[in-house]
Image (cartoon, rainbow, N blue to C red; front, side, top):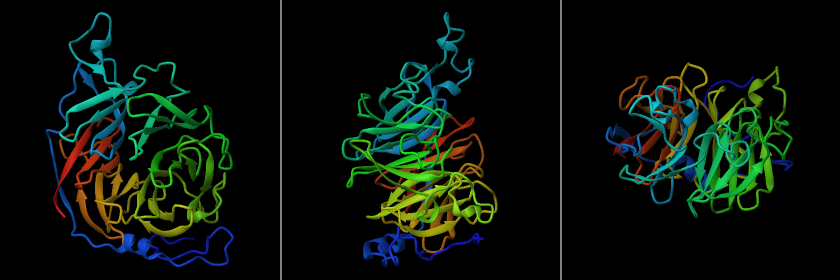
Length: 372
């Protein structure tokens, strides 16, 4: 059985090679770079109010593009009839209406644009997820990838920055298992490697794997499970930690590393981008299902990892070298700077944090870095 602590050891999981190669200096630097412990303050005035009487439903995704614009994905269908009273004919109240599911904010908090399938249009289940879950931005051209976690969301989709459909990978329907490259299994998270032009998917609600596609053609490239091993469709009773129970958050780090948050197993696994397992950290909190997202701060080779925890509703500042917690942001609550079902986080070039809230939270917040 794998002990629940910080594990800084290499495992011989090199896809048939006799032994794992030592870490490249650039990889080692990415795991040991030194920064002062950051602290943050909520900006209660960000973002600006929305036009047209729009409001947000459950906010499932937040991402920052190369121009520091903040992309927000939400679920209009989660708004109650009372909340969207202005949509009835005739309106039953002055406010409000569901905003389009994808919104883009300028760095100052003003709305740049909004688009999507707000009312369950024809695109749902074909060119738009049935149930919005996550998004990722390609830094090269600000195209956006979307994933959903409905039972039939067996695909991801790509749009250009103005909302024109480009590509679908996978197909509608329930999971066909971890070996299938034709259909995904309610994918949880995505991230784009612009240098290799690859999209990495945490295929985690119905499957137990990381899967990688060519971002231009959609061609399957590779996939793997916990420790870089072949994922199984049945958990091992002898050692369930050999399986990624639910890969949820996924992000890039350094020149060659991939960070994957395994929510139920409350751990982070770090891989090379070719799927070779590097290291593992178990979240030190005593509670369960605590690793919802994990993002390096503030740059790709930082020493710090931001762990979003939707159970305790806080962001922990985790030291990659030791696995120790050096800071916390937020707590359970409805007010600015607090969270109600924190789902994921994003960071801009300055180091400010942006957060997305599910449940009754239904909002995006910004936390300004105070000290590096």
